[in-house]
Length: 161
Ligand code: COA
Image (tube, rainbow, N blue to C red; front, side):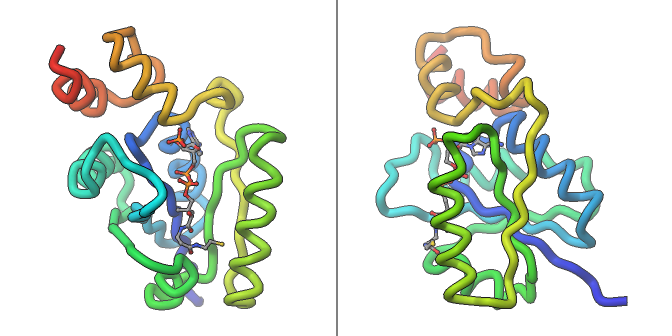
């Protein structure tokens, strides 16, 4: 039977429990999931791409069919190179929809054989994003419900606590 590979792109600055919830759902749907960190020139990340990759590798170590990678350039080109037929995106709330709709239709126009599949994280993560986590961590607030332990420690170190 044909193996189905999915890519899950994002900035992951840093990875949150919401992202991990989406990854876990994806692992039961696809044979292989590649979590790919986008190098986005419009964002100035707190963590370097290598730091983000290392945090992700540690966070997904419990899943045997997940790998982590960094990509630059066009997402569909990267997906084609990896023989992936699916792009995974998380949909947290209606507010995500318009942007995700534009992204997925553009990607489909560029590469019609690749489908975007939206997964909804657990509702307890619907309000969560990486900016919120970074802001809370900068004030040394308690973020244990939002990110895994290794990310908590990395944020503490980054902000000098
Ligand atoms: N849980 C928690 N937070 C989540 C989340 C979830 N399940 N899903 C998304 N988010 C948050 C992210 O943490 C991020 O937060 P931040 O902006 O506060 O840092 C925000 O939602 C944006 O999500 P992200 O998944 O990181 O997307 P992005 O908009 O940064 O990146 C790419 C989108 C990488 C997929 C897109 O820019 C891309 O494909 N780039 C490559 C170039 C390309 O092909 N361009 C053409 C696209 S049509």
